[in-house]
Length: 141
Picture (tube, rainbow, N blue to C red):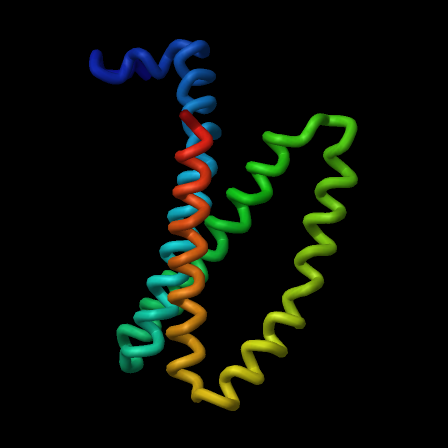
């Protein structure tokens, strides 16, 4: 199959490698976008009704998936090959601390109510995504 003239660059393996490299270099941007999407979805979930809430659940799941996959890819990119197994085991162990955050969020929820707790979680995620993006781009130059 012959590609149209405007897409013929895709036939070159060198261009495909370049394009893959460009996508990999944007991993930090994807991580920031994923965390921010999840935070915005949490804030939307706290103020919405059922129909928008379902869309916010989908956005939160998509944002979480993007952030976790990007974090995994980012770690693989930064760590040397001989230390990758150790680093990924620490990354996996860090995910074991999720119940501690759930316990703290449960205590905050019982004190303030579920809508306020979800909104506070969303705002914290938005702040985290913004600060990570600022730190990443200030170190890039």
